[in-house]
Image (tube, rainbow, N blue to C red; front, side, top):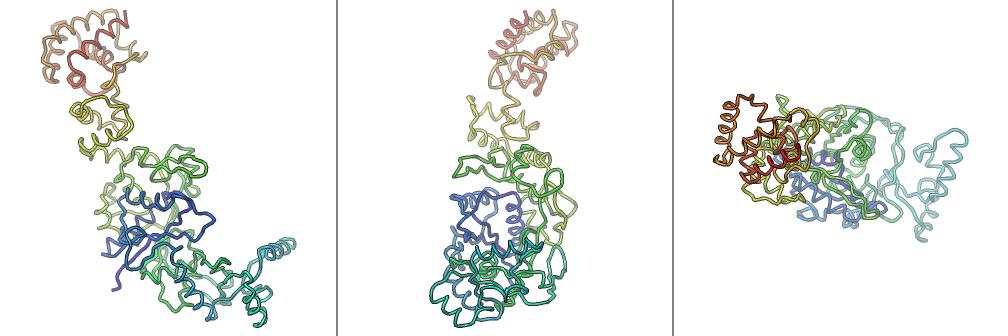
Length: 501
C-alpha cells in the first residue's frame, strides 16, 4: 500500500477561517491514523490578494491548535520549497510539457476583447463561455495560423495558457465522502492554466505540486468539487496517477442556511478565526478563539465534530484519541451547523479537566489585574472553576475575592436584610474574632451562633453572604471567609452594617 501523504494548502490572503482549520485538522487526523505524513504548503501565486503577515498567522494558528506539519516552509522537507512563489522553474518545465500535448493551447485574447464578446452575448440573452464551442472563433493557437502564433510569441505578446477541454466526454468521478458521480466535458470551460505573467493558476500549480510532493489523498472543501473534472483531466494530460479526493461539506451559519462567515460571528458574538487578526491596511482587529479565552484542546475538539462522528458518539476526545478513531468514510456529506452554545460547552468541559496550576498560569499571563498571592489565587481557582466557561470567568465571577463590594444588589438586599440584621451580624462579627479562620471552624461558629440565637440559617447566612459578596451568589460562605481572612471578613461585615443603617 502506498504511503499516505496529505497536504493543507492555504493561500495567505487573510486569516485562517474555521473551515480552513477543520480541513487542516482532518488532513492531520487522517495522516496520523494511517501512519502517514501531513504537509503544509503555501499557495501564494495570487499576488493581487496577498496579505502581509497572513502566512505567519496561518503557521501560528495551526501550532496553537496542535496541528503540527511534518513538512512546511519553516520546517523544510525533501520536497522543498513549500511556497508556490518559489517553485516557478518547476511550473515552467511542466508548462512546456503540457503544451506539447493536445490538452492545452495558447490564447492571446485581451481582457477588453473578452469583455466585448461577453457583452455581445449578454445583449442577445446568452452567456459567453470560453469552451469547445467558442474557442475556434477566438484569438488563440487553435484558431490562428501557426506562423501568426509564432510571430505573436516572438513579439512577446501577452498570452495565457488554457486547458483544451475534450468534446462530449463523460467523466466518472470518485469521492471518498460523496461516492461516485459523473460530468460531461461539454459543461466545462477551458480554464486558464498559466496567467499572462507566467505564473500558474491554482488549478495547474495545485496538481503539479501534489504530484511532485507525492500527495496520495486530497482533502479539501466542497467549493472545489466543480473543479474535480478539470483536475482529473489534468492528471490524465500529464500522464500521472491522480490522488484520491475527499470534499468536505460546508460549516453552516447558526441558523443553518448558508456558509458561516465573519459577518455571522460579528452578528452573534463569536469568533470565526483561531487567533486575533489585525488587518494590515485598516488596523481592524478580528477576534480569535485564543484571545476570547478558549483552550486550544476545547477549540480543536469542537471543530473536529463539525462534520465527523467518532464511535459511540463520544464528544470529549484528545487529539491523539481523534487520530486513532478518524475515518474519512465517517465524515458527513451534509453541512454542519455551527453552535456558539456548543463551542462554549466544550470550553467549559475542558476548563473542568484543566488543573488548577495550569489555570493559574493562564490567569497570570492574562491582562487581568490580579493583585493577590499565587497561593490564594489557586484556592480561588479551585472554588470557582466549576462555574467557569472561560478562564476570565474565574475572576469575573469571583471578583469579590479581589475587592470589597462597593454596592449591594437591590433585590438581594430586600430579601436578605431587615431591621434586625445589623444587630445579628454585629454580634456574629464579635464571635468571629475568637474563631480559627478555616472553613470548618467558621461553619461550626456560624451554626452554633444561629442555634443559640434561635435563628434559621437563612437569617444569618444570606445577609452574611450579601455583606461579603454584594450579591447572593458564590461558593460556600465559610470558604469565602477563610480566603478573605479575619480582618477583611469583619471589615466587610462592618461596611454592610454601616451601609444599611
